[in-house]
Amino acid sequence: MDVSRRQFFRICAGGMAGTTVAALGFAPKMALAQTRNYKLLRAKETRNSCTYCSVGCGLVMYSLGDGAKNAKETIYHIEGDADHPVSRGALCPKGAGLLDYVHSENRLRYPEYRAPGSNKWQRISWDDAFSRIARLMKDDRDAHFMETNATGVTVNRWLSTGMLCASAASNETGMLTQKFVRALGMLAVDNQARV
Ligand code: SF4
Image (cartoon, rainbow, N blue to C red; front, side, top):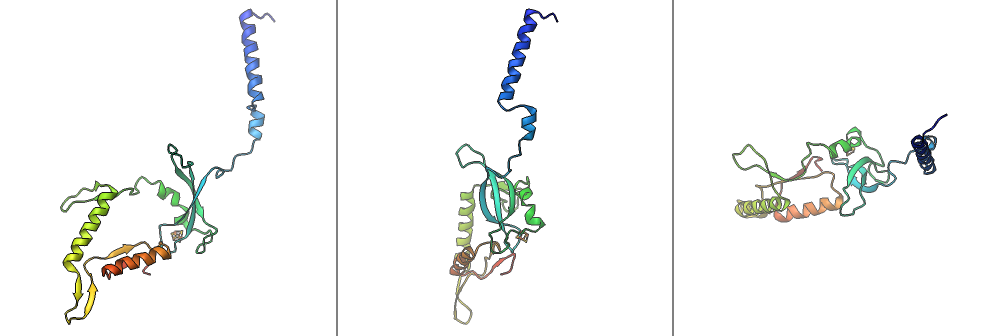
């Protein structure tokens, strides 16, 4: 075979590149033989409760990101928490589909406010939302708090505002919620579980 000087250098360069790639472990046979990495291998685990209903099943959420400032965390797998005393790892279909809920475009991620008479919601900061809630509660309580009833019996109650709580809250959160609302004199307290 006649090989020109230029062709000779091309053949040598190609051969060296192939040898180097194979030496680095990129030979197709070796690559195909490698086992797939376990998908949760480098995940960060976070425990939580399902948000859907009052059963409050336990979850383990797996996310990427090591907590570093520039690392963007994203949840990519959710499963039942086998150590959870209520659900012991089980989830119903709604809970098993929580990953779609977490990443849903329709999920509300920040407080919104609709002014009286307006048909539009506007985004506000969490500070603004908390300040507004506190202001409205204070004003309403000052205006409607009853120390005694019509017969003069001390009642110390506030009937014009109620609170809707989360049924999936822990016992401790539930106790603090009760203490908070009862200390204010509020009687209307409810959640979706009616407990
Ligand atoms: S997994 Fe199902 S049963 Fe459990 S809390 Fe969520 S919605 Fe309720």
